[in-house]
Image (cartoon, rainbow, N blue to C red):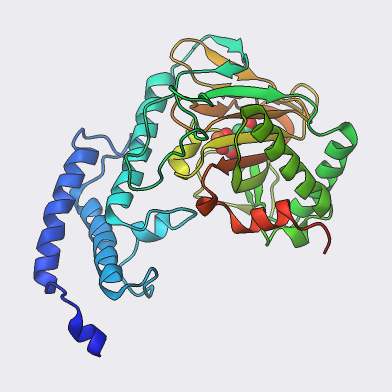
Length: 354
Ligand SMILES: O=C(O)CCC(=O)C(=O)O
Ligand SMILES: [Fe+2]
């Protein structure tokens, strides 16, 4: 009670009118151009206000009470939607996360054109895209996050035969087995590689080995230290599996063009360890980087590791699949130890037996 008395909380009317002004200006900044986050539907002031005010109140209250996490009884909606890894915890951060979504949308819109020419992907640096975030969500790590002025540069690279044939076969088996117990989202089945995944993966040591090996290969190639921010095993299968485990999912389109860093701010580097080959295991399904001129296409080869800077310079998508089964271990790395994924750091780094 003493603590509560000592707090100088503005009364709720003041709080709300302050937030109203801030919300109005953020709304103008984000949606004044009449475009919604995903293009189609414009964000209405009513919806934005509801979401924004919920976030604003939450932030004010948590600051006042000195708690990071408040009871879920508070108004939610927007807050719930963004509560994922590294979700911004401040109001400014939330606005910035929205801004990143918007910037992603605009970049995709600019580069996603019908009938664009394609060339096969060549490894190497590319100029960095403009920053997705300003300052409130994640700060770039000098000399590790990609940059135009300092090594490592933004770019796209491939390493061949990071996993051998035998390892690829063993991974395939373990992943397909694990996926039998999971729901499918249209053609996509996915499993986040964290502590909850280990009981599902029979080849746990191998999975951990490949995670570690991929990180080391990229760290070595770029000359930087990297921490896992996330990893996901993904299967794309055409025709999609039908039945009870097929879910109507609200997950985004598995083939949509996107920028990884617009999803999670702490991602600095993205990597894909392919576990199946285009033209053999599946048709279509190439990885496509969208450029201002010709797009760059990579036909996955099992065992190959592709990696690239996670920012706006690397808008990418998976080309529609025609048939078959496409498996990949997707990994995202951060330069900031503070943002590392605790499960992956422990398991991929140190755990050898359990
Ligand atoms: O599977 C691929 O080739 C790309 C997947 C991807 O872009 C992602 O998961 O963010
Ligand atoms: Fe991606």
